[in-house]
Each structure stands twice: as structure tokens, then as C-alpha cells.
Length: 328
Ligand SMILES: NC(=O)c1ccc[n+]([C@@H]2O[C@H](COP(=O)([O-])OP(=O)(O)OC[C@H]3O[C@@H](n4cnc5c(N)ncnc54)[C@H](OP(=O)(O)O)[C@@H]3O)[C@@H](O)[C@H]2O)c1
Image (cartoon, rainbow, N blue to C red; front, side, top):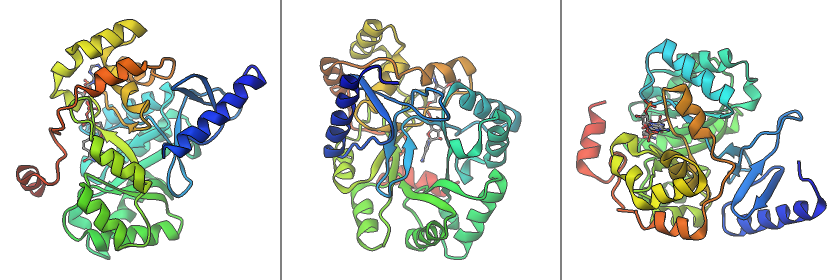
């Protein structure tokens, strides 16, 4: 907890600054160095966990655990449970990952109370028609073994997105889903959805890493109050050269951290949430151990210069990507 009142005052000033920049961090927050934010919560236990307050007031952990391609049930249960024991409090899954049952079992196996965990799933676009979307969501509740979800995203901006969004709006109003959002939405699609529907998406989950930083979309989202959540923060291992770039290795050496920790810290320090995946327990812990250092302005600038603005996976405007998605 804060050791003196001076530190405490600084905390709330910092929070106000974050709010002004649209990077609202809520909760009981202590900032001990500029850019280094710690969140303290959970029954007297100190937890280093920054949270983002979404546009509907719901708090979302800024770092979560991704479960794409962890399909084998025993492995998925082991990884989800290990992540929660390591301190993660957000688990990201999707209907299309085929692992919702195992994710639910992993949550229960961890021993961490359900109410401490932010669970996200994604509605698959083949189920976007009204009626179908509700049944698909009920299936997710059943598979995960939960009576409510913290967040549900439209996985891709394809198919009958309007019908699906309105079904999510209803489920949100019924109290079954605390926050609703989208994924893989390009600027025009995001603006369109926001203009013609009642509830604004709380989050847009998009591919974001050092080589595809989404700077323009980030600015648009910040302006419109949509939180930026980065998927594939390690580019799914497709951009290995990014971990050998001098900007990354120099920062890693300076802080005694790994290249992957620098890649995650770079996102979090801009108020971008991230959901790295690993199937290895050591890496699961490594990816969470990023709350005790802050990159300098110079390091942030050098890392920002690595942007090539070309996503590997998630450009919904790209014909090849769209055609591939249709084969799922
Ligand atoms: N909304 C969408 O359309 C969408 C699309 C893709 C992903 N996602 C979500 O985002 C999450 C993360 O993305 P992702 O899983 O695609 O890819 P990612 O997190 O960018 O990368 C995962 C890869 O990085 C490796 N890795 C993890 N930690 C490492 C470390 N510390 N050092 C070295 N290598 C490390 C993993 O290997 P090991 O497993 O062997 O450690 C795995 O090969 C997904 O799991 C999913 O929840 C969403």
C-alpha cells in the first residue's frame, strides 16, 4: 500500500491525467514512478494489476491470458489454471477456439473465485443471425459453466453483425454480459456500428504488436471511448525478427527483462490491454512479470519506430484474410 500521503496525492493526479488522455485507469492505484502503475485489490492481498475502466464503468484487467490454439482439454485446463495461479485475472477464449469447456474447467481447477476473474468469449460470425446468436451464447454459458460473462465480442465484422450486436445488447441489458465489444473491426466498420446501434462497443480486440501497432485505429478508439485490446502481442511467433531488433534488446538489457516482456510493457504503457498466450508455465509467469519496470520515453520512441503498420493475421479489409475466415 502507499507508504506516505505524498505518494498517495501523486497517484490521484496521475489518474486524472490518464482520464484526460482517454486512458482511464480506475480502482485503487499507486503510481510510484511515472508510467509505472500498480493496482491493489482483492481481500488485503497486494496484486500488481493495472485495470482499464471501460466506457460502461466496468473494470477490465489490462493484462490477460489468451487461449487460442490451446485445444487439447488437459493442456488447456493446466494452462488456464497456471495462469490464474500466476496472477492473471482475465481469460480470453472464443467459440471458434473449441476450448470453452476446458477453459471453464481450468477456472474451477485454479481455486481462484469466479468473481475475481474477467472471462471473455467471442461469438462466431456463423451464429450472428438473431435467435441463432442467443442459442450460441447459451451454449457458451453452458460450456464455460458460468451464469454470466464479463465480456463477449463479435469475433469478426462479417455476416449479420447488426442482428448479432442487438442480441448482445439484449443479453447485456438482461445482466448476462457485463460488457460487449468487437474484434477485428476496421475504422469504418467501428464508426458504422457505433452510429446505428444503442450501445457503444466497450472494446475492439485487434492484432497489435511492435510491427503492427495500430496507431491510427488506436487514436480513433481513444477518441470514441473504445478500449484497445491487443491480440497476438507476439505476432503469434510470425515476426521473430522483432525480438532481435536493437530497440527491443537494448531496453530488455537496461531493465533486466526479456524481449517478450518489453513487447508487452510497450503496449500496457500506452494504455493498451494485451492477452498473450503461452502453453509453457515458465513463459506464462514471465509474461505476467511486467509490472515492476517502466520503459523510458526514449525507449518508447525507439519501439514506436518499429511499426510497419502491416498486421499478419487480423486485417478484416484484406481479401485473402476474409476469404480464409470464410473457410472456418
Ligand atoms: N480476436 C481474434 O481474432 C484473435 C486472433 C488471434 C488471437 N486472439 C487472442 O489473443 C491471444 C494471443 O494471441 P496468439 O495466441 O494468437 O499469439 P501470441 O500471444 O502473439 O503468441 C503466442 C506465441 O508466442 C510464444 N510465446 C509466448 N510467450 C513467450 C515468451 N515469453 N517467450 C517466447 N515465446 C513466447 C508462444 O509459444 P508457447 O505457447 O510455446 O510458449 C506462441 O507460439 C490468443 O490466444 C487469443 O486469445 C484473438
